[in-house]
Length: 234
Image 1 (tube, rainbow, N blue to C red):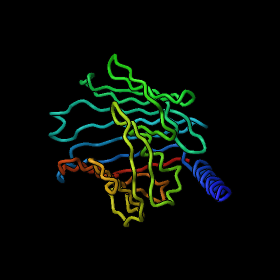
Image 2 (image 1 turned 90 degrees about the horizontal axis):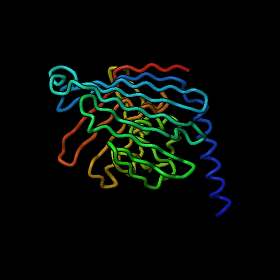
Image 3 (image 1 turned 60 degrees about the vertical axis):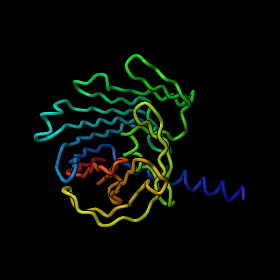
Image 4 (image 1 turned 90 degrees about the vertical axis):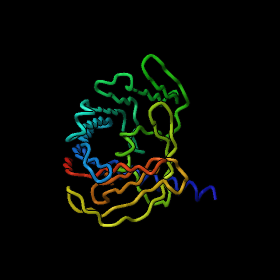
């Protein structure tokens, strides 16, 4: 049994290493945000890889009449290392234009295994579980995962605390979006009894990048994010 477990781990490392080698050097993605069938915002995301480091910037802004009520943008940043297991964030931040009281950031010290959560002048230090992602890096970590098992679990920084995600994985439908038609893999955390349900459709022929996401809150309200444009560079 011990030798079998070691062999399985070796296979997983090989798969992750191959995914790292195949991952693109640059991505620019645009998503539309819908609520109750109405387009309320747009997200622009830019991923760049420089050898063993990455940077991610996501800018969200309201559209149409909703921009009158939420004129400021939300700018989320993530940066860190890339190793055989994929993205390893070191610094994460979320800036709300015009609402500085909502700004948050995090520092991930992998050597000390400590996570520092920062909100205004308050710094909270907690243990840093292996494989932790932030909300932005989590969406691009799928590029480095084989997704061959029926379940996927990881910790994610969600504002001022860590949230555990347990996704059931299954083949998804052929999905039509404004960016094109994609063969997909479907991830759903509903099976784990989460209060907030997250559904993801990953484009399997495009590095497992998300082409659709639906987040359903405890009251049944839904926010849908759909890919509008995708540019990938080597």
